[in-house]
Amino acid sequence: MLRIGSVGGSKWLPQMMHNSNRLQSLTLWGCSSLLSFPTNGLPTTLTSLGIENCKKLEFLSGEMMATLTSLQSLSLSDSCDSLRSFPLGIFPNLSSLCIGNCENLESLSVAGGADENLSHLNSLDINGCRNLVSFPDGGLPTPNLTSFQVLYCDNLKLLPDRMHTLTALQDLGIANLPNVVSFAQGGLPPNLQSFGIVGVSKDLVETLLNEQLLPATLHHLEICGVWNLKSLDGKGLEHLTSLQKLEISGCESLEFLPKEGLPASLSYLSIEGCPSLKKKYRNKKGKDWRNIARIPCINIDDEITII
Image (tube, rainbow, N blue to C red; front, side, top):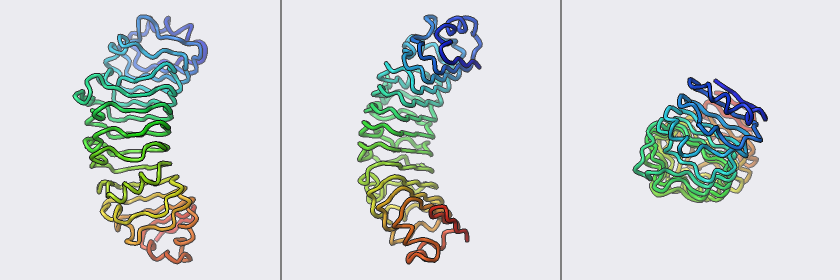
């Protein structure tokens, strides 16, 4: 493992790479003057590459990327300002990809389109890429993807096409995507176990519930920061017979939980920063407390009730 930090990277990186033909893990951070990788590329033995706070660094050329056939983990954060499009299929054995705060990134691409098969990729995390506008046409060709997070991408309007084909996906998180107002045709992955919805539009949440798009496999559901959401449609939750944990926070306008009740499988309910709900459902004092009293563990603004 090799970590290169601060201004030293620009001076010593070429020399270090020259004698690192067995190197497996490389992290570059804070190399503000580093402009490019060594002309002879990086060690082909690399399995993990992290690049952080290297804004002037040109991302790997296509020729260099093609040699990193052993790369399994790539993390790119606050770096490579010139990168506009990231080629998903270039690393054939990549299993984990995290791209954060790459402000000029506009798209993720796949050379072979929907016919490409990125079978090794199981974790994809895109965070703070404010100019990201699109995913590959035809969706993500990632049949074994188990975790997918898309956070703080202000200009993104649509999640990937054909998400319902991601049958291995278990953990999905979407946060602060103000321009995403609907899901692609086909709905959500069918085997989701955990789904977090944070800071999205009221219309998106209502569509999920009204059209019963949430998969029945869900164990954990989080709804946070939807400030103008006023109620939850019970028909959108009643089929969630595996739901064990429901967390609702920062929904200041939310006044009602479903009149039909919450799923009988629920073992934990958390309500935080929802003043109207707190008043109605607080322990033994709220007028609607009896509607949730059967739930084994209830947390309302850090007041915990266990039965």
